Length: 82
Image (cartoon, rainbow, N blue to C red; front, side, top):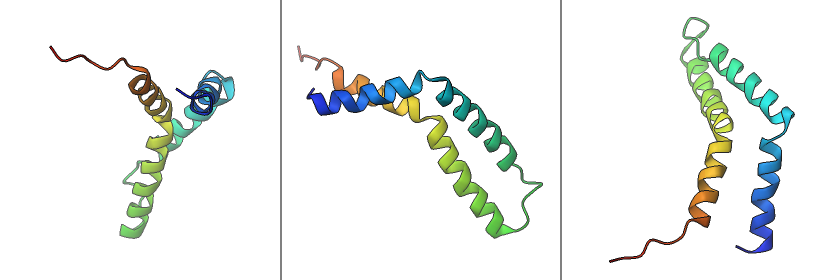
């Protein structure tokens, strides 16, 4: 792994360990619960808007796992064929 890529991942790992990241993810998770309400939907356009919001929130809430999985894949030793 080159230094630039290593720095890329290390910067994210530092972020994920911070209290600010944990706080942000907690708030995004709470927002997702509030947005994911059919009762509060005004019309079909609002429903699609909420669907888009949930898509972005889900990506952000799962971003740490996405980065961790990409790093593990990158650093995993190639499997040898028998």
